[in-house]
Length: 56
Image (tube, one colour):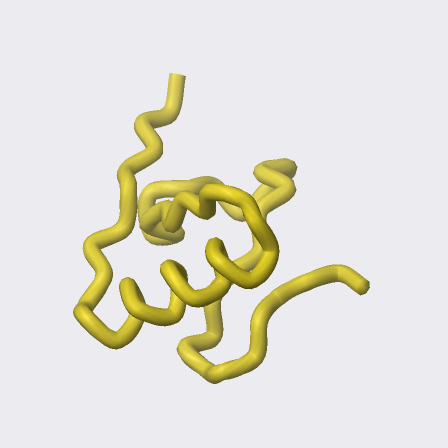
């Protein structure tokens, strides 16, 4: 089974996550994409921009 690790976020990234959690009313978890396989994971990759990878 593949090991999935929680991402290490800097202060700016953490503040953005907290803001998003407050705005949409859910708990978000950031995973380290370097530990995840790209095939069939169903995960979105971060591009370090201010845009979120929301499907809608």
